[in-house]
Image 1 (cartoon, each protein chain N blue to C red):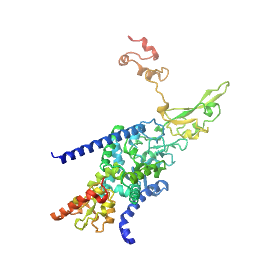
Image 2: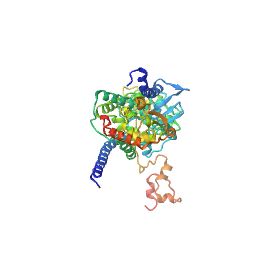
Image 3: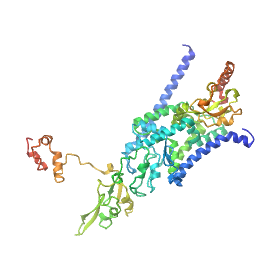
Image 4: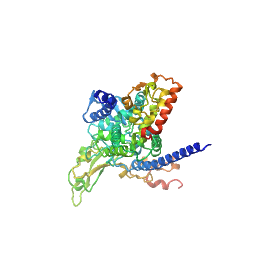
Length: 256
Length: 305
């Protein structure tokens, strides 16, 4: 091997090493930026049918066709100055909520499936969950309001009005309560709330919702079903054992 | 540059056409979104350059964006995949990087930067290989697979700028300023010619595409006017162009600057299957070799990075 080809080889190897070095340094910085954006706590309200935040961020091609399809100008695309991951659609309920079009045009406009076509009924959408700040809710303060209940498009199931004892008075208060099994998170209640800052807000369910866990047994609710479910394996397989009554009585039967 | 107006127009013909297509693409998106331009009550084009729907029924999608999403191991609906194929088919016919010079809005910024650079006679502050964009291309796909989000789409100045034009301004214009400064004062054709992975992607498409710049070797006088104006001067490899009859490198953007400046009409648009291979005498070939070798060494005072 002569000196020229050695020199060329050295130059070639040096070039490769430099390229790899730049690529890996740049790649690390790039990856850390991506991780930070993509794994941020969900804060923005997504259009109906949006997948889980992680899958949504992966699938959304940031084209804004949902934004154009929305007849109420509800949706916006996050730009560089927004908190929301860049280019993805979101809405601010207090400005313009989702009016729950029955034909769901935003979802239909989505070319990638980030807004899943599996959503057939707009009432099955779960954009968020309404949460009431009872310290600032007019009804909970003892006034008559219930605007959120009257504006709610999922009538009488997402928000109900219950009576509640009032302090130092024989009269009752009528207070709104949100039910997560029916609330779509459309934000019409948040838009309608008459307080300075809305006392009912749409938030991501995972930020406020707890989970009971399977080991708590609510014997007084749906007695039969729950007893059946929480009956120990041994007894369940033996059909001759009478699983009634419920509660903790199973501890007194069998050979525990 | 010719003195007469018609002569100037001859040089600028394709530049004017490119500006028209670039601006009208932007305007079409903007008008559909803001002035409700419609056809049969459907938006003329909805969406943006990442993915759109033309006339309410023709899906279009950025193949590189789709490739990144697929790299995250997510499945996509057929609509966006059809759009990808339509766009790929178009650039297969028209030339891969026709995207870069005829559609991409960044081109106007980088062209302006080149102009400023020429006027002020600015030298490169750094040197990066023109192949570096392929590294970024691979990196974008690898990072998409690792992090689970389309890596380049999250930082792409093209998408950010185009989105903000259509859907409301944020601070995306600052990215354009960044590209302008980088291209004008740091590295010639820095973004489009060295870094942009979308350009790299379309360079790969361009290798196979049909519409190319035909090179009529016998008429070439090696005045290298074309090399001076070309944003990717390495593609004007006269030796290769002579043997193939056209500019074969995928990095050629079909911008047709060279066609405008060529005093001998050596360069013309033509479809690859119709371009005949040209036989060369040994004499002619040797002559060419020495001329292009000199050219590559000095590039008339300009180093081809």
